[in-house]
Structure formats: C-alpha cells, structure tokens
Length: 49
Image (cartoon, rainbow, N blue to C red; front, side, top):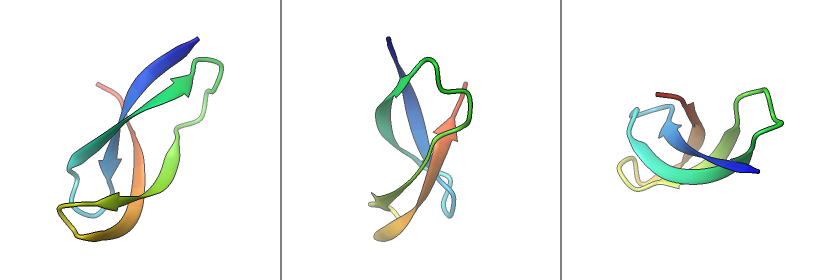
C-alpha cells in the first residue's frame, strides 16, 4: 500500500513535490531534489498535515 506525501524544501519551505511512500516506513523521508524556487538542488523532507 502506498500513501502520498508532500515534500518541503528545507531552505525556502515551499511545498514542491508529491511522492508515494510505503505505509510500513516509520521514519520521515528525506530526498535531494531540485527546488524551482531556489533554482538549485536542495534537501526536501516529508511534510505531514
């Protein structure tokens, strides 16, 4: 089963991506992605509502 999560840029705090995550994972997901607002690759972390 997958759950869709929102990814947030650590530098500018904009929500940029929606990514599927397996429901068995307990730790928060962190990925290095391109932020179109910062215009560079930055760390993105999982955002929960």
